[in-house]
Image (cartoon, rainbow, N blue to C red; front, side, top):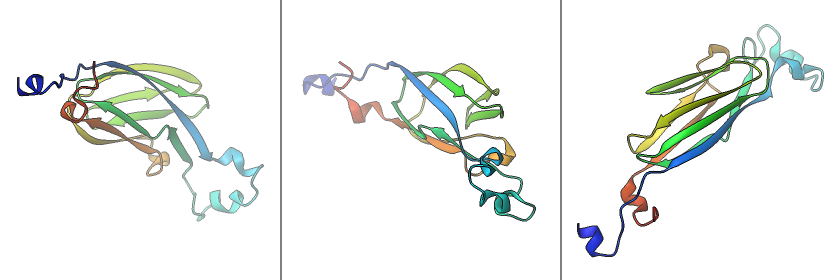
Length: 139
């Protein structure tokens, strides 16, 4: 009521369309292009048993109460996953996956791919703003 008396309007939650793509950064297949990677992927190398992937974008910002319609694009043949503290989606290789998530709480929430060989590099964050922080923006 006080907000309305001051000319501020309440934020109205929105549906947001967000596309996240899995991106290979340093993977075994790149050894032909970058010969230095042979030693890195070899037994005892810094990437032994690992591959480096990323989510693009790696930060998604919404407002508490928003419904996020995710489109996950995984253009390669490796399987990935998208895991938040209270949500998970499997991302099969060479596929597009759709999922819906409601941002119920304000805060910064890490997301990751839970495939062991892709940790700890494949991660990002969901930033959920408080509706009070954006009051008047939802008109």
